[in-house]
Image (cartoon, rainbow, N blue to C red):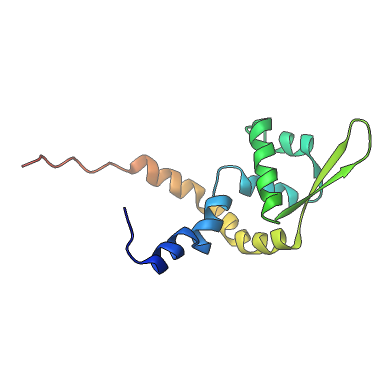
Length: 128
């Protein structure tokens, strides 16, 4: 779709809400941040804490979080190199906002599952 209004196009392309939620709303970001909110972790500790995540996906996730300033990465000059990840003040400020959502999800999870099970999709209407 071509947008004729250049101001509107710029807003859509640079919308802060969409931009941030696209990054933070993926499958793994919140889980990584929740783990790092407990304290500094090495990559292997994060991987064990989130067993479903592949090493490649964890690498991409921590790289994006570091790029966005939500976590920091510190490399220690050892053999093999030791890398630790920590949540930054910006990441902590996001976690403050996220805490209510996490509590809501835990409190209402069974209700959401029951609603999903009870849901019947609407019947398709015949084409006239």
